[in-house]
Length: 189
Image 1 (cartoon, rainbow, N blue to C red):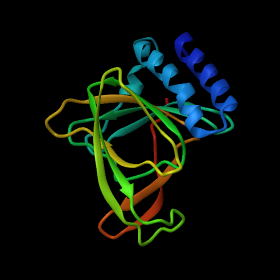
Image 2: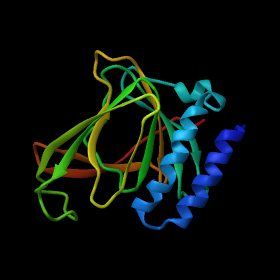
Image 3: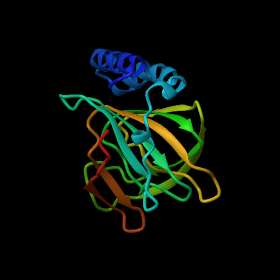
């Protein structure tokens, strides 16, 4: 069963994303919706949205559009859990419901985005996102980063809205200068 707040968010996100074909305009239109959704998270997040695993961060599907144009996940990060270095191939809007989520960015120094080898990445900045924070990204240029929670911080829970069903993405081996596409699993609601 979908709560009124969640259904309103989904309806508005669908409408606004269809009206904004440019990814930068799309995330600009969607970020305020995510900010409002965070404030209403307790009205729709259910126990299955807080599922976690001691092995890796957990992606819990909340909504996936029938045409695969949008997906919303709750992601639960236990202390010490991190993504690999990755990009999304999509725009995205992220809001933090609980804890502090850390994002460490990478900058592509090699000019050709279309190759999977000879990729030179340099470490970029760090962003700390605490409860109520919203961030966004666009796919061009690639938003390459690692996200997680250090060992010395408590669990974090975040909401991630993507401009597609997020069942695969590119991961990078920084030392080898390569990237490859992987499929990712999620828990169904």
